[in-house]
Image 1 (cartoon, rainbow, N blue to C red):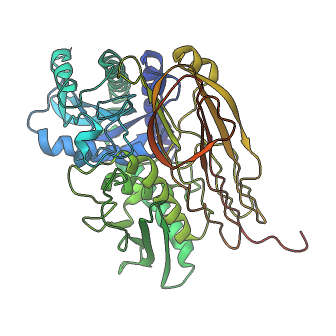
Image 2: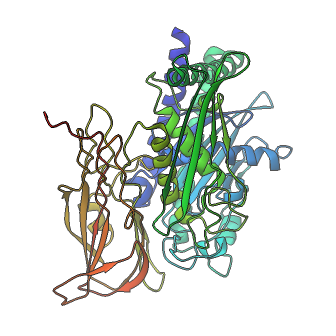
Image 3: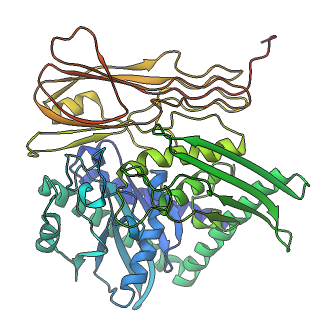
Length: 523
């Protein structure tokens, strides 16, 4: 047990130091300031071993990308190579999330992988930021990189990657920044290689490999213990829930917990009943749905263990084909990664009956110059988290599938002179009432000093974040816009893209979290 705990921290520490390298060397605000990236270690089969506490929607999905690399390039993998991918059909989340994978060989044998996934400010497509709200196909969202060589024989493949990023009809913008951040991700991978190699040299390859297996087994046992609490000596436990995106698209889940013939607790999670594929960008690849399940059920474990694939060993996930959570190839997915993933989490918690809905959106805000020149900017905006029994929800936090920072106003205005942040405050009273209150959202107001193209992707503008066990729902979000000289704002929809001019204002009011339990009269 002592050595297991040691390796838990050693492996997680390697992933954390990979992240430190990435922050120090990256150029974009997205990665350097907002920390919109994740780093993790994988075994020779592509199974997640350990991660740093980065972005859940990345961490639960990256393993599918590593496995896709193994399936497609297993015979051609060699030392000195690094691969890059963002393909949703190959474990990707959405195109701006680019994964850089480094295979690690020991004595000529493939033993491990290290990988990082970072959200790049632009990867092409029909609008700056590569998250067009009304895209119909993957092509309109940007450049697809599918297990392409990024480093070969220790040399960065700049000519090939520039050629790939420049493909028509919608090439990537600001390619020098893309290259800079990709080089930083390669450096993060090299840090992981060095650290893991040193660990093998100290303890021996067999010991390190064995403890990767023990960690997954320990995580599996921890998950079985959680599932056993739901059963509480009953033969089975069932829960179900459904919620809707603002366009009326249904996401439904049935959860059944039972004991197998051998007496081991097991959970079946079935998303049958979920809406068909979205005709826009709210489709979520299966890797995203899997990441949401892994995140939710990992939060039920109180034991301090790294997030890894062992957590899912006692869980079976059924995602109906040709659905919102399992869309056809080449479907638009940029909103599915950030918005639909949040709703999947809410639906899972609703079925478990343990947590009120959090804000249920990432409130994605993007902008860039109208002609596509210069740098692009992207951020997710905090909101309220749902209350739980015995605890109010948190106010003004990034919830669930996102775990990024927000850019400091000074950094934002220094790097982007076209914008000024006029207000950033809590949205008092937006959390749902209850014995335990939901957390409040925030208000964020932007003043534009130059013409820009802006994009908003947000949900919970129609359906409120639900309360739990009699608690009240949180307030819906609002997006307000003032044209230069207007005294009254216009109410905007949840998703939009428009050109703004100097003197215009945009105010984003994010949703609050739901309350938990009806308040007793005696309280």
